[in-house]
Length: 421
Ligand SMILES: Nc1nc2c(ncn2[C@@H]2O[C@H](COP(=O)(O)OP(=O)(O)OP(=O)(O)O)[C@@H](O)[C@H]2O)c(=O)[nH]1
Ligand SMILES: [Mg+2]
Figure 1 (cartoon, rainbow, N blue to C red):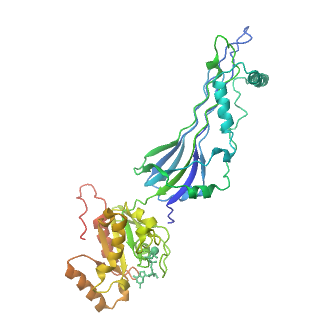
Figure 2: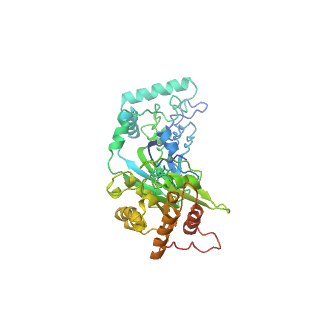
Figure 3: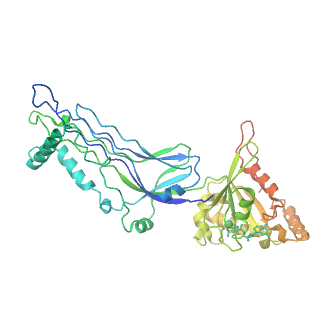
């Protein structure tokens, strides 16, 4: 499974529907009072945490998300229908950050002009001859067509041209400094309204007064909002597989799950975390995350590790893998120490996370060499497992330890036993 952990998108809520300009038509009354209804509210943009999603991949394929606009008001005091909200499903564990605005003009949207118009009209400056004239013209035209109740028809549903990405957009996003965290969607079904839809405009029935019996104007709908949002998925894996580059982490996850990460005999083969799922006979699942190799200085941003350490923050158990090539009989714990130190400097709480320690590639050792290391470990009273992800030797014992340490307690079962350090 391809795992994408970051994306950024533009979201826009829908514009409010236009208020209607309409007049009652009754027999023998040539010009009845205004009865134009209000426009409907534009759609909100809502993010929702979906437990079935594991990646942000879909959000990479599309960049701009727009909710629909509200319907225009109608005659006989009928209000326009509110638009449906646009729901964007994201994996559980997605954080949303606000990116700085880039200036709406770059989109060539008529927003500013429309706002001015809305202000102008809501101020109901009836002395403005031009405005009157335009409204009257529009009304006459509509009347001719027999659809005086709704002058909104000429507009596209949201009244805006199709969006396009302005030049320099990507760069500007890249340069955005520390963005502000808006929400952390950690609960399945949790929602966050990122943009509120615009309010519908008032119909002309609101503008009648003693001096203004036949208002030939109505408010346009309020514009929607626009935001640029960065999405960061922190893997909600149960187990984080950590270790130095080339230790065999990807080989292990490929051996025990259907994940098919790239495996190669050079460091930093894995560039983004891979997720694998294992399932027991009861259908209980454990999500494993194969994290790119950490090296000394990861906490300083050296290598790739730093960027990915945050994924480990949320795992319940760490599977710490070292290669037998790096673990001499006296130096087995030293080998684990390098990555432990990186964890500690990045976040002391991380270093306290339960760890299952595994020496991998034991197929490269003679039986005597292996026995020597096992004896050295046993003498310390600590637990270290030995396996070969390549041949499968010892892998079942590692899986068993993972289930013990990370499986969520089933009803009627006590919590998993703590892992021996
Ligand atoms: N002999 C032997 N080789 C192994 C074993 N496990 C992995 N390898 C080899 O070690 C090399 C590195 O394996 P990977 O699984 O890519 O290592 P990794 O820890 O994911 O490395 P990075 O992604 O770079 O951090 C590959 O050539 C694997 O074939 C093992 O149990 N025995
Ligand atoms: Mg790898």
